Length: 120
Image (tube, rainbow, N blue to C red; front, top):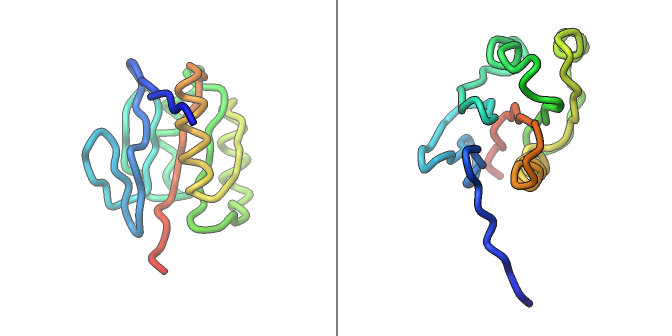
């Protein structure tokens, strides 16, 4: 099997994640994160809109990583994000990280807001 190395230019992929953390740009972040071409920011969860509101007109879709499994997000969160013009895709954090990195490598206008996975 031939494997091609993916190169990211001027964008920020998620290097890895684990129980309670994300590794982005070589830094370990022990929090939820919002990551886009605009930067990496700590995210406190569904009550924290600041980073996402700042992405208005800069991205088309934000992937919401809900943790180990897919969970329903609060309706107030969905409505507020959609009101500022961002489409939402809800998935588990592992799926959101993979999808974000793949679409990022294709040059898509995307972001991820992800809660960390829990240890098992």
